[in-house]
Length: 271
Image (cartoon, rainbow, N blue to C red):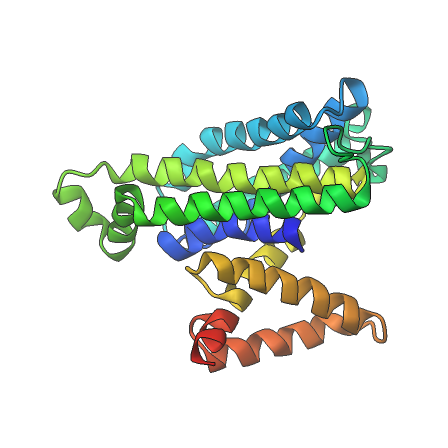
């Protein structure tokens, strides 16, 4: 829950602040996972290095694709991000020597570090700490001038540009921050499951992250965490007694969206 909440918070920065709906965040998640896995398998599993490798891989990909995707809007932005993610999915399927192909890479070493991070309990606590720190930083960023400009760009990019703000570069740095948070989540996920595969790049992963954002509340950072927790918990509970858990999750999402524009967080605020 903590790992996917971190990834959803990264996506929510784009969806909530800029109104840019992405179906390609699986690219950042998968790159973070593979970079951490390869670093751990062929190098060292020291936490600082594997997590940094995951973030660096996601940020580099974001920087390379941003000039293409950020010049589009609406459905075109969504389709471009989806296309880039699916390109990585296809590459991971074919680059067997590095990615393991459809079999993936097993045996990713546990995270090394102080306080026994290789043990489940300390690792879960560390994941929660990372989530809390990232949410706090993003919250501070939202209330900073940078966040206010992002909101202004969302409501009127032409007006923001007329006032002298370089809208593209504000969106560029927001895109990189979003990719960094999601890449960090992917790196943590690789250590958590000890396995990575091309499935990490699949559009279904992006779709699940988007559902978490909408379920918890678009534009509300803590809503991302709530949406991820409910999605993961609800999926685990329903899938234990039926294979139609996708239907149940869909009905839940429809009910929440119709009941509150701010998702579950909006219902919490009402209560």
